[in-house]
Length: 436
Image (cartoon, rainbow, N blue to C red; front, side, top):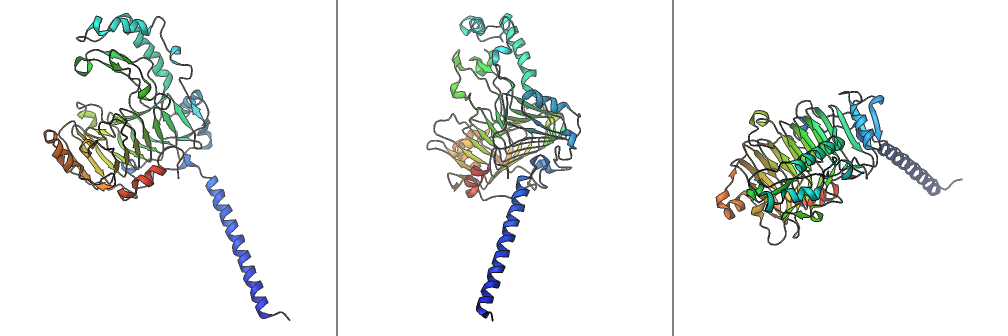
């Protein structure tokens, strides 16, 4: 006869064994599902910023098997972009694509010589009263005309571009999201293009001169329904600190990291890392662009990191821009100027962001007035404490007083974090290689 206590023990052990087996099977299924996740099919969640307005942003999620590509070279990438026109497509980037691997010499027009360029346009010779012209300037422009088509990639409508794994990216290329609709760019490290042939403008900067460069890592130009998510924008191997000076000015070889311009609309920029750059993110590129920009440039920026940047995070013209739960970190060594640029007819809402400023940098510098335009700035924290950014700006810079009240209230938000938790949440979760 079996002892009742032993029977109970056996039954308990059997139940425990079954539960353990079920847990193991459930974990295995969950792991298989996680491994089988296809980020190329993921779409912008409903209510997640301006990019979700209207028809939303789905990119290439509906692509058939014939329009799903994995690319490992820049040529393969550009060829995939062209296949099928505007049919939904998914392009998976594996490894690092580099359109300028051969170096700047590969783009130089015959006869162009930088030493001759410097000699011809030295202010001691040329002065500061007229733009440069002549043989070497013509050859510089011709060289730039050879670089431009080599490093730019035109992204069609209904496209998802997504990095495979944690180390996918593009070095020295420029994504042109121009005049299209419904595009997703995710999980890529985008190293800023290096302009091989910057132009010297002796009349710039109050006739003290400046070097001007082209090429953004990505530009959204006249396009709608765009989602830029979990990317890392960086100057990589060529930070501004490594650039030489000529004629007493930095030989600037970078333009922006991300520009949203020329009537672009309904864009969500989320969970990205913008690092070590000067002119970081511009929304609206001209005060005189009312015909294309008024009533458009609706952009949401949330859960992004801006670390070691100088300015434009963002600078806004015209647009209704919602910037919340972003993290700004400023070090004592960087050439920091401002975070939010208040431009012509803009209506910026900056709420529940977290900023870390070093000693000697006042919160008054967070906002920069370029034009008289209203903004809302509430619930922002600086160095762990709540700060009324408009009040402190107006108190310290009364000649550049800003008007409070953007005149609209954002409704397209999903999870909004307490700004005190933003350094931890965003610091850990933003950037390439950190999708989900």
